[in-house]
Image (cartoon, rainbow over all chains, first blue to last red; front, top):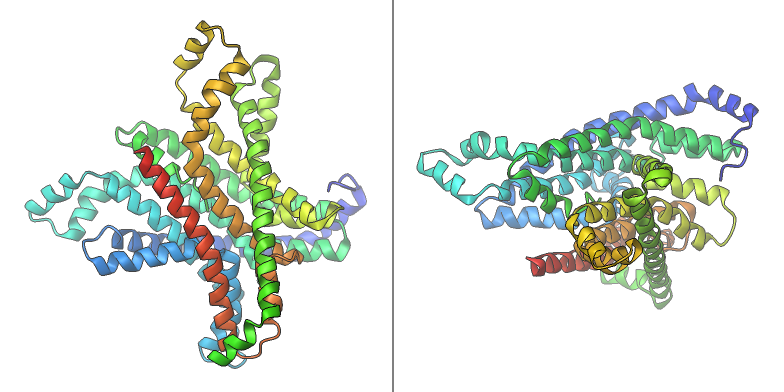
Length: 245
Length: 218
């Protein structure tokens, strides 16, 4: 696994390959992760609110979305988008850009997890508060905006950060559809040269550079949320999912 | 549509795909089994290694942080290309390496939630430290982390689909072999739906079990 890791010559070759392989791959991964994160958050808020709304239909829709995307592999979803969507969208030689594929695949997948986190967060706020708000003439949106969200946000931040961490790691799935991301370039350089130790070690470092700050942030937010009165109980509940992804 | 279904689900194809599903389940069970073993060992070291042994705790911390911050797919590819041996075992090893880090975090959370007083009580009753862990702390921890553990099992099952990239004969790879024989998009859609359904039944089943269990805990 680490054979030839300390071979200077190989590292030199890797340095030469950086601008051509690793830097564009890294940027692609970064861009994809950022846009997918935005998409996931939007979906998370929408479906999180759906699943706490009073409408049965909205609740059912969000349930189906969450369960379907959480319980099927991301790889399957992305490969499906890759091979079937172009044909469904009008056929012919149309190709979906890899960037769009990544944002869509990872964004929709992580969105399901974020919805679940946001739902737990909203449900943790006692019902009495919503009723009190309604009795004061607050609309649904106003209740959310002024009463529920400000309390929820602090508690759901740690699990959301964990999901963001998973999201970054999951962008590596793009390699499966030749997605020009970090993992794809790592795989292709590694296979070209046979210097696997160098190829994957460097790649791991690049992922670490993005992920470690997020992991630290998650830890920090967790400690801070624990200080909130409702935080501890809730965190236990949300974390019972283990931040799994 | 009936025509396509007949084409896809010939007895040969069906057995072939189900063999893949069997492989997926087997690899998942293997990886989960070893990650629970290894992960709990890591968690115990990280939580209780004190004094001279605290260097071990630091190493474990570095291990978990590093694996938590790198994708599973990376380890699968790296190990597949560099470790020799039976490819199925190599895959189990790769997934175990990654999943142990996650498992150890889950166990650590459980260990930390055991009140300190229990150690003191056990000591006053003449329990040695290993005895306290084995008979008092571990059973409680394990019970507490079962939901998180099962959620991670779902993740492992889904992650085995990465193995398609290294041509292990697991479910998704075998299905795509069958898909290669199809020419029209409707057949492909049916097959994708079938794949999704199989994964869904397994994973959703586990997630229902998680919810039941959590409810029973109150």
